Length: 123
Image (cartoon, rainbow, N blue to C red):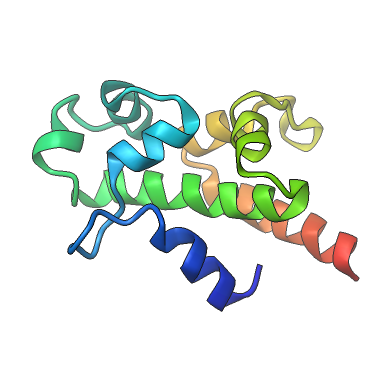
């Protein structure tokens, strides 16, 4: 995904009039309640509501949205991509899902892996 396309994709998840991602918007696309996002991001359960700009929460949300963008580009459908991120076991990562890898703090490795797949499919 090019930087321009990625920026436009990520923008749809931005909290209006703020410089950070909306926990509610990200949660909605993946079917997570706000408290589930907090648990997955390893922050206090009230953080998505009271401190949505918290660095650890924003890192988690950014990785989820970045992976969703790559998966959407590969699958051609946002809903299908969200389903795959939550449910598709990845052989290269011991059959863990993308969502589980991000929760474990392995988002960077996952993004590099998906970029290599997308590059191979395009090139």
